[in-house]
Structure formats: C-alpha cells, structure tokens
Image (tube, rainbow, N blue to C red; front, top):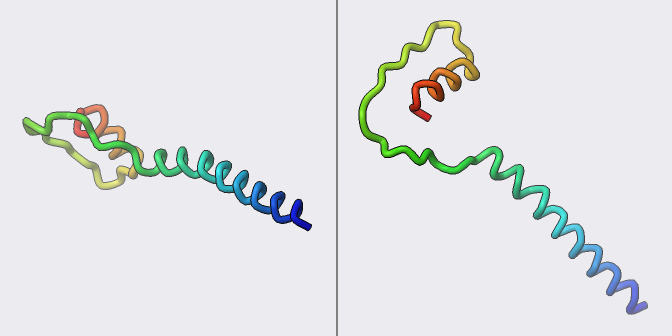
Length: 66
C-alpha cells in the first residue's frame, strides 16, 4: 500500500516538472523581454488603413521601434 503512495508522489512530481518545462517556453514566447534600445530619438511611422497587425509589426521592426 505504501508503494502506491510513493508512486503517486513520483507521478505528481514528474507531471509538475514536465509542466514546468512545457509551460516556461510558452510563457517566454508570449511575453518576450523588453526592448533593449536606449529609447532616444524620434521616428515617424505611417500606418495605412488596411494594414493588419503583422504588417504594422513588420513596419515597426524595420524602423527600429520595436
């Protein structure tokens, strides 16, 4: 009977460790580190009426904003 409790604790530990190694990369993917730039200067960006999020993101990246 004791071996079932030990096995259950080990199983919970394995699931917790596996969840940590799966959840951590997903968390970092959806919340990347802050931009390292100095935050000085100015830039003028033109966003067209039909630009989607991907196009706006590409424009901001190529102009060095993000």
